[in-house]
Image (tube, rainbow over all chains, first blue to last red; front, side):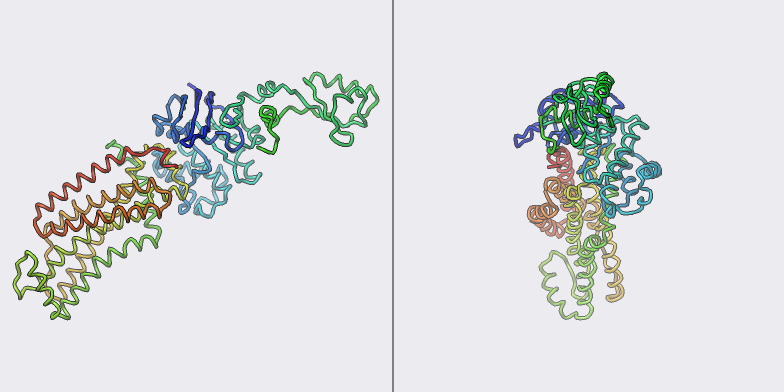
Length: 305
Length: 267
């Protein structure tokens, strides 16, 4: 059974804005899926549809075979959700919050406490377990939210911008935890983010969204093959040989970028440059990143993401 | 539905909501002060007047003549105390639970919305029905607790004062049972259900409180006014009216459970 199935899923808000436009995709259990795009691309709406908070205008969706619009509480029982808008109680301590949410999911207090303390340790929050949430920083709150979402050992995690508002170090920490937990618990992860660079570090497959439409989906390799731009070879040479003058772009003093199709071209190129009498100081092959792929697909300038 | 009404998960919400009020000292005191003033201070003042300035009671004599109650002049203090206890104070117990509940009920949904904890609660494995039910029950149980506490404090203070100052004990009538076990809970449940519904639609706590005060209070005062008359007439009529209110409360709660959707709640 698929963990998630979206079939021509569309959502138009009462005001007429179409947030999700005929999106179809499937997630296998255990996948770490990156659902990527800028703000307003339809990521949050999709998460809300997947949890039954919104009902689809057209199309259908299933989470482990369940229809979230018809049986949202059954979907909630096997999913953990982290979103910017799903906060916890400021007047309770970190651990008391987890104990409350444990009870909400039917765990008894000793079990909630045991699991809560273990998760707090994993999230490096043990020192703050008896501190009221009001005193938590944004990064601590995000990590506690992650602990809360994992408390009932969900089969699938929906993470909507889990690192928004975090400094790079905290974001790195949260991402490392997501990666580790996904591997340890075999939990399916549906990660929405506009930070493509981070997503590339932890996801196994991607869906790229723009204005409610799914532009492309697949593994990094398949997406790289799809945009077709191949590899950029970065070279630092004493000077550019004449035979490359038309193909290479200068990036600065002695630094050149050269588009090539496959890695197999590299040895011959290096031999030719050396034969031409130039000194070679540095050769680096760069594959297109997710960002490169996204911009190639959308023709957007990079600043928009 | 019934089997899941008092499951541990709904109970967790009820406990959490009540604990939040009780741990907020300012709110909790506000919740207790008005009931205690009504049920302890008011009868005490009445008793003190009766004891220290008995000449003032001539006015009460006129009042007694208007009431369908028989009394003999020499037993007047006793009659007055029993009048106070059995016909005047019960009205407070129609108002107190509504007031107590409204504080908590008004913030039930919109309070969580303002603190951005509502969405988290909705992502739990409870249906909207169960969450709504838990919210209603939390406010209802708190209001009943305040009501019972006020009753105990009132009876204790009244009996002690009456015994010490006037030399006899007041005699509560059996209608008190009807008031505390039927009428007061029924009216409270109607108020709580309506206010929680306001709270689910409101955009701010103030919004919900205003709806509660301007839409609900006039209706409740009207209801209370009717009961004041009924109290004087007969216990059977009180029972009948109490049952009607209880049925109305049950019906209202049942219908309200089906009204909500995530989409409207999170708007």
